[in-house]
Image 1 (cartoon, rainbow, N blue to C red):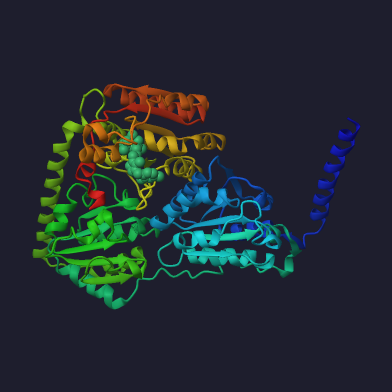
Image 2: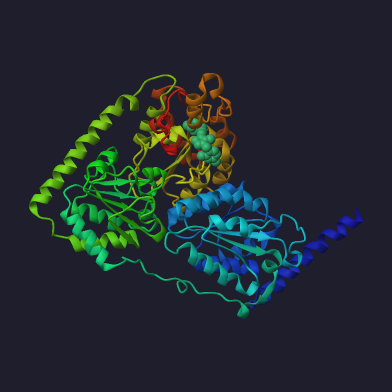
Length: 585
Ligand SMILES: Cc1ncc(C[n+]2csc(CCOP(=O)(O)OP(=O)(O)O)c2C)c(N)n1
Ligand SMILES: [Mg+2]
């Protein structure tokens, strides 16, 4: 007893003494505080993290610099949230993890950011340099592991250079097409205290180029000529248009030159549905018949059939932030490297007023032809969208979700088949209001994206549509979202299965052997929201979808806690893409 009484106050006094001493000497700084200073200089106002002994000095620095610390329950969510925050703010996202398993847990998020060209800095702890290769706690070759899925991966070798290396990593994250970087900081380097004057600290706004390059002026002229002469142009605006915040340039071009525009990835929502230049159901028809196709900020990957699905008669032009993407997987008539917004604005200017009357008319007829085909395609889908079937048809859910969205709802899709189906009905109303995992196809992004979107835009509504398989992967961090006042509406299309995969198995192996490794239990996920203090409900009838969504909206606004609307959908219905297995072709 006596021992306890004397030790406790002594320990407290020591910590306080150290703090007082630090407060007295502003010329001394530790590594963790240098991390925070560098992040602040970079414009980072929030880090996503899960604690570990290797990284605690970074938190102490963040407290001093006023950087918000969002601590999650699984590092995968921290990495997805950092990615989501970067997508929503246009600034560097930051995830901080401890060494070893903290690092590996974050890898799916880093890999997702890599394939989605999202600027995320991952800072990771490491054992002390003095224990290098001795088998320290949680030691792994982090830099080697991160290298192939980042644009830059390095270890920091001295406390003096911590801030400098953060600026270096940030520069790499924004070089050309953005992407993630990894920086490992050993524990002794992070904890060491040095004289502030000896630290290299690049100043805000002074360590990166500000150029938004419109590329080669001759290419701008060439593209302007092509578009002026075109009778049936079409343009695809991909994720980079939003990532580089080039939406005004892009919208200006399609309106000035009357070009039907299609969208993919984060490009969805660049124009609102109903806009005369917004098209979505006739992409293959347009690409088949167009004479000029401009592909902006999206690679010829599986989502584009590797470029094979574009008409042979068309002149294909590709614009990208990354030289390595242009002309990859298919030949092109013209390739431009640079900032999509700057290039498209320059092309609009170069082409302005040069389209003659007969071509103007032909282009209007072309747009008209496509609009009619769009309307016919929508009419064909309407019976599914309005289906009263029981169990609920997943197309009906998709339709109801679109009806429910406001101009200010950020929509996130995290799931297999149900989410694929939702893309046929859900039309975000504004740029940046659509989030999907991108080319890595990672399930589990939803919870991190949702909290990040809400933290970045507290006044907007955030709705995440999950598959039941996906929801189970990261759902527990709904508690984190609630804890930090970032509630959202979670809607689950629950078919008690990993249905997108199950379809292919049934098709290949039949009923007897096709249901292996893809069936899940019937989970009443509404109760999950209740457990976390929020509103939850189960929906089994189509007519109940809309009222349940409205109740969820009201409950989130009132309680500040996330709501779950668990919609039981028919496991026998699939998306056309799933049936055709297009993702593997
Ligand atoms: C992390 C991860 N694991 C596995 C897959 C493979 N996969 C793609 S769709 C899918 C099924 C997802 O099930 P659910 O979220 O319930 O959606 P459903 O297809 O049932 O609508 C799986 C497992 C993946 N894309 N990502
Ligand atoms: Mg499912």
